[in-house]
Image 1 (tube, rainbow, N blue to C red):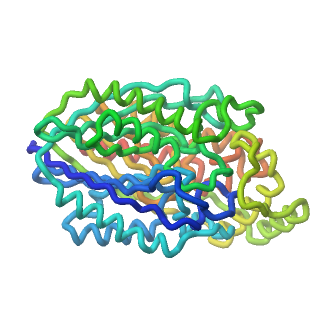
Image 2 (cartoon, rainbow, N blue to C red; image 1 turned 180 degrees about the vertical axis):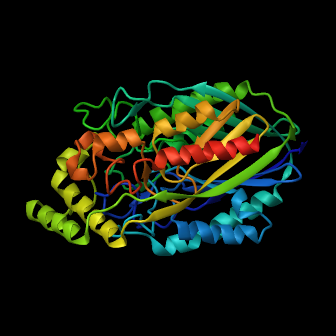
Image 3 (spheres, one colour; image 1 turned 90 degrees about the vertical axis):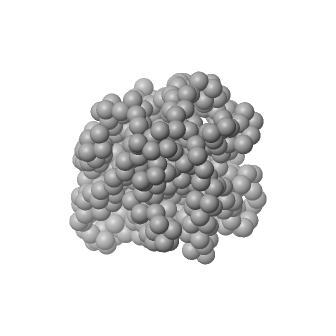
Length: 451
């Protein structure tokens, strides 16, 4: 046990207007403005023996090469690579930063120069947080925010309404930072939006700032590969709310209101014990069709329709119905991605799982977009009083479905019902059907070693 020191920083990483936006395939236009700043926020925790660095980004995700560059520079600051967690919020209002796509068959417009500059900004934030280290206290709490999320593949399926929080305060009692872990896709704004934004995370942070004006809010998204806001399940003919900033505020304030109640009742302590461990895991890829078969799928799709040629969605478009409205355009997109995967061939994907514990808290950082059932399983079996399961961590590897989801959806997107396809079939997930369960087993194995 040692006395805690903590340091924070906040760096603006908003790109110039006119950058390509992320998240929605059928939004090819460039950003037209900035609704709210895009941030890189850094928290350093130090118990005298170990340092853990958490970087929260208002970004869709990062490719492996970019993550490696960040780690390389952070190591020069005396921080071990395995002690760095990069947590992307996955907002669909961010600039596109996924240069090294999971599949190479589709020409997704990216902001190469912006991505090249990101490591220097992020590492600069880490430097500032290290400079700001001071004696601190930490505590944990949890609440529930129910009725604002839905399983987008099965409207009566599982969600994770648990809201996990960590509160860091200075010795004199001022709140320095709050970490908020909740599971939901940040897509309250649709493909009509052309303004850079953190989505509902902006409104969540805004509300917390009103309550704790000196604190930084770190949003750590959960296992939400199959979780959408409100009643926005795939195929819902009449969603209750449209994509809008009003919907974004409604959602963000719902989480923020509960967070404030929990924060008020968190007791903090200065004696802490940090334990950190990460391990690489080799996951089998799903065997793709042959290149010849994939080329045939592309030809067939192009005969039936044409590529999406608009800069953004129509005003009435909604995530609930976008797949059915543009089914032919999606067929072309998916077929070209399958062709890219076929050219890469089968084999294995190597990635990493990061875990750290702090007294009665465990944090598990998973890559890609894990389905909610996987996060719930880790929470049930972690053995810790409080468990943060963080999705979209470090490198992006695509969707991480459950074996059940893969079995019910089928092999290729075209073989699956539209509401079950996304995230479970090739090409949106390139993992074999048991990849998600293997990640859960590895995470629990690491946590067991940290007890």
